[in-house]
Length: 226
Length: 134
Image 1: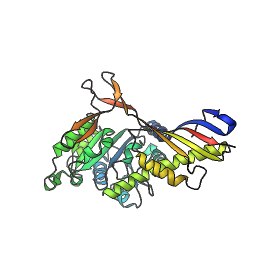
Image 2: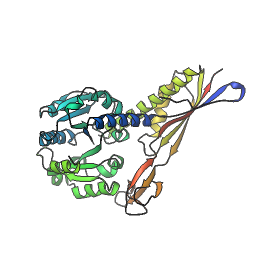
Image 3: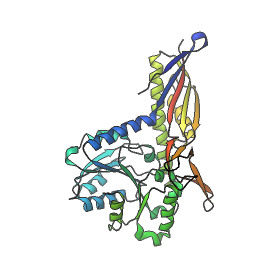
Image 4: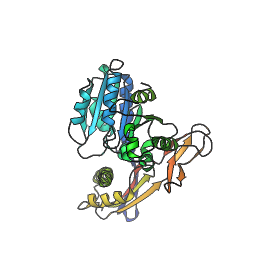
């Protein structure tokens, strides 16, 4: 991984000054590009779904699988520190699901996704939903090779979640503002959350959802052009 | 919640710094170095790497190795953007929000109504190392 560019011998021959120019984040981005090429070769659309713990990522995926089965042959990757609890929730709906347990790592990376891709017969699927580890910080740093990135943010996280974590929204193509049924109880203005997203990232499409009932999930699917 | 996110964040720096240390030790081995004197990193301001946590992780991870007590230089790099409509190039803009007393980064072009793309500031680069070989 490390490229040796140049060796300069310092005075007295005691110290070597070595230029490395090794970018560790770039290494992940290169692996993400490989994943992207592989998915494109098999004509598989991939969506990276990010969001905080308990924001409703798995519920959104369940409802998307229900709505899109028939139109697409769907597989899912479920990133978690441990357990297959959520993977079983998704698998129930008929999507082939691979759990990626990261152990202690707080995000998925392109290397892990590349390994998980080997577990799938890509000829047999058209749509891959990748659920990232619940976290609003680190996943933004590690592109996985998906076509689009979606973020789920729920009103139960409070009124300032977008403004406090702007960088994950900067990378989002679609943002679902979830748990709309609880907005009044939480005293959270969803329009304000939506305008916070738009202000940080005017390109992001925003949908209001209740991923338990399924309300608004069609808007997310439309925004993702699925 | 706060402590959980904080620990996630330190983990992130810890794993990145482990990779940095591993790369430097590999390089040192190639040159039969006795000691690593200095490591020069470039970290973009649009990464999620906290410099304090990188320094802390570096100290912990290098203890007992030939990198112990080496000098860690960290150069930061601004976020660079380019507008897809008007071609504007510059730093990532921030909008001050009087409601929250904090600048919020935005992809809105400061020059036109278009949106910008990020073209720099996401580096985590080991630029160079100084090795003691004799």
